[in-house]
Structure formats: C-alpha cells, structure tokens
Image 1 (cartoon, helix red, strand yellow):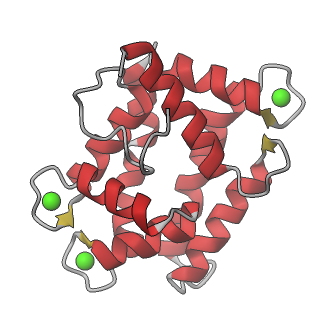
Image 2 (cartoon, rainbow, N blue to C red; image 1 turned 30 degrees about the horizontal axis):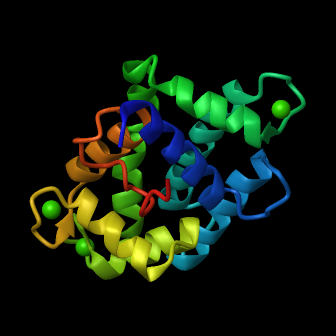
Image 3 (cartoon, protein in one colour; image 1 turned 120 degrees about the vertical axis):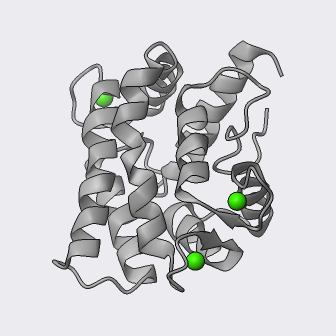
Amino acid sequence: MPEKSIIHSKAQHYYNVFHHERDGWVSETDVYAWVGRTTQEFKLTPGTAPASALQRSLLEYWKRLFVPMDTDGDGVVSRDEFLAGFVSLGDKPNDYARIVMPSAKVFVATADVDGDGELDKSEFKRLFQSSFALSDEDIDVSFADIDADSSGSISTDELRAAIRVFHSSTDPNDRGHRLLGALRS
Ligand SMILES: [Ca+2]
Ligand SMILES: [Ca+2]
Ligand SMILES: [Ca+2]
C-alpha cells in the first residue's frame, strides 16, 4: 500500500467506526456516548477516579484532536473535515503523540479486569467492542497488530505504540495501522 493511501484508508476507517450515530458528522455527543458505553461495559461508578480518568482522557480526544478538525467552526466535524484533519495529523506527529498517548494507560487501567497490568484477548475485546463496535474479525486483526511481541496480551507500551502509529505514521511497514481492524482500501 503506497504511503499516501494508507493514511487515507485509516482516516476513512476511523470515521466509519467512530461515527456510531451515522448522522454525517462527529460531535461532542459521540465522544460522550463513547464514554458512556465504556463506563457501562466495565461498570465504572460515575464520579469515581477510574470513571473520571476515562472521561477526561476521552474528552481530550474531542478537544485536542477533533475540535481542531472543525475548520468551519459549526461545532461538529463533518466527514470531509474529519478526513482532511486526520490526514494532516501526520504533519505534526510529535504534537499529536503527546496528546493522545497518555490515553493508553487509562484504557489499560479501565479494561484490565483481572489486574495483571495487561489486556488479554477477552479484556481487549470488551474494550474495543464497547468503544467502536468492531466485528470479531476486526478484533482479531487489531489484537494481532497491537500485540507486537505476540505474547497473547497487550501491554500499555504496545497500545501506546499502536496509537502513535495509527495517528501519525505513513510507513506501511509499521505495526499499529490496524489499531481499529482491517483497512478496506
Ligand atoms: Ca464543521
Ligand atoms: Ca489483564
Ligand atoms: Ca504483548
């Protein structure tokens, strides 16, 4: 896959999986819905430290990632704004990495039900299916892509590396492009 097209494929795929409401745009409501689904899946009590950390972390995605994409300032991110905004993330990979990478720690803390510090397949599946409604097939693709040492579980470092590659890399040889499952074109 040529460099240019992998970032476009990721942008398209991210838009499709993120945008649950299918109303044509991404808004703050979608991010709150994401918080709600994950909070419910892991039975976090609203107002407690884990629930607040999750909400704070996901709202950072809205404020730092999505709001800057809203170039016409109407308060929602249209499909075109999303695709253009995502593609331009690669221009400032370090800025972006600093913003989203702390979320890896929060995701692992949220979903690590057995408390061993990593996400096994079932923990990962609950996290990514509640967040993005990925198919079983996409869960398999995603898990294998993130689990860089093939240990059968995902560490915070592995998740952080995949989040970075997904949002900023144009090198097709990197692992992490399939953070949210298979890329379709
Ligand atoms: Ca807009
Ligand atoms: Ca675990
Ligand atoms: Ca691993």
